[in-house]
Each structure stands twice: as C-alpha cells, then as structure tokens.
Image 1: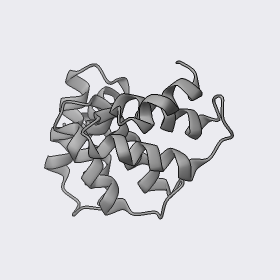
Image 2: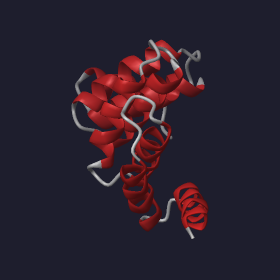
Image 3: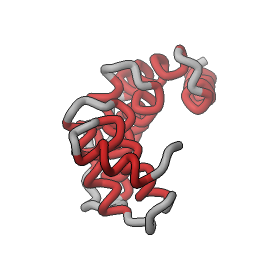
Length: 138
C-alpha cells in the first residue's frame, strides 16, 4: 500500500486505481483520518470507471450503510458489475444477496451459481458455503 498523498494526486487526475486505493486509505484510516463517507466518495469514482475492487467495496458499504445510506438494491448493482468481471469476492457477496433475498428477489439457484463461480476461483468462504448448501441437498 502506498502513501495516501500519492494516491490523492493520481486520484484527482482520474486514475481509477488510485481512487480505489485512496478509498481504502479512508476506509481504514491509513495515512488519513478514518472517514467512511470519504471512502465511499472515492470508491464510487473508481467504481463508475469500472474498477471491480471498488465496485465490490462500494457494494459492501451500501449493504451496511458505511459512509452512505443503507441500500441493498444498490449493493446488488455494484456486486453484479464486479461479479460479471469475475471478481470472486463480489460473486460471493452476490450469492449471499440471492440466498438472503436482500436487495434482490430470493433465488437459491442464482445464489448457487454465484457461490460456485466464486468457489471455482478459490474463494474459501464460497467453498465453505457451497459445501454446506450441497450437504443440505443430499
């Protein structure tokens, strides 16, 4: 992880990766005061440019209302954008959205699809959940 000041310079010039990294700095108080709203601001800028990590993190912020209004449907939108780019954590999160029916109509088949995609990429959380779900089906 680099320096928040370096990221800010590049982020203000439009670098999506720097915007994402600056969001991480604000989210975790790395080199700057922790500020979830500021993190969301930078995640959103990067997410709108297509950065999958930022899309996933923005979705998480929307699920929990960290630095923004809690909005599970908005979270699903961002998880889906990242998941469609094969972002394993976003696929896992999207799977949970479908499993729980939060932000989207509950759909076990769709949940299994996304958990399977994440598990196939080595996401341990998805592998564990998928194993439990498959055991219940047997």
